[in-house]
Each structure stands twice: as structure tokens, then as C-alpha cells.
Length: 128
Image (tube, rainbow, N blue to C red; front, side, top):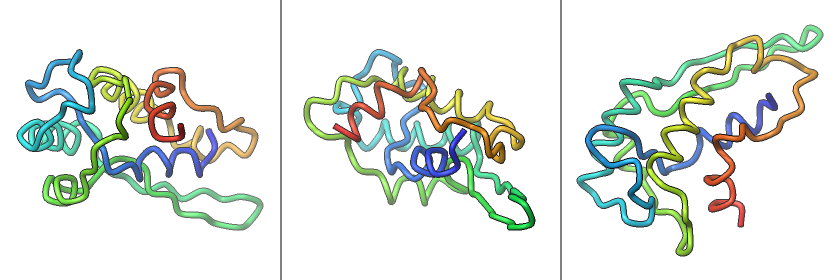
């Protein structure tokens, strides 16, 4: 997995998740109450972690994950652009896919940097 791609996903200020918010809800319809619930979920289920990779003697520290606390998550939330068709379920799937990436995969210099299939709907919204 390309390290910059991992950093890009987790730099997204939009982090909806479970916490009682339906999977089918469009991210464009997420309100402040939803954001609070979703931030609580992701801080608990996908906490930030730091990975140090050694690339031929050159160490790089990469922060992977979401946020350290709910306040940080809530204060940096920004809605997706109009026309985004991604859902809360899409975000959950994407976050899960990135949470399952191992340190070895993050540090693999041969990784192709492709977006996990579970994240394509999100990347379509934010890179479109």
C-alpha cells in the first residue's frame, strides 16, 4: 500500500461510522449528531497508530488511523461535496479495509498504492 495513499485516506476530515447511523445514509445527509456518533465509533474501532518504516536505512514515520479523540474528529469534520453518492456503509467498509492493513503492508516498498476496492466510492467523491 502506498504510504501517501494511506495518509490521504486518514487525513480526510470526514469520518462517519457505525454508532447508530444507518449504513444506507448518504454522507451528504450526515448531520452534527451523526458526526458525533460516528466520531465516537471510529476513535474506538480504528484508533490512530504510528508506523515506522525503514527504507534502505531511511526511516519514515507514518501516522495511520483516524483520530486520537472525539473532539479532534468533531472539530475537523467537513461534509463531502454535493453529488457524492457514498454512504455511511461505504465509509465503514473503507475504514475497515484500511484498519486491516498491516504494518508490513504499509512499509512494503513494492506496494502498488492502489485504493482498496472498499474505498473507491469515497475516493470518487473527494477526487472528482
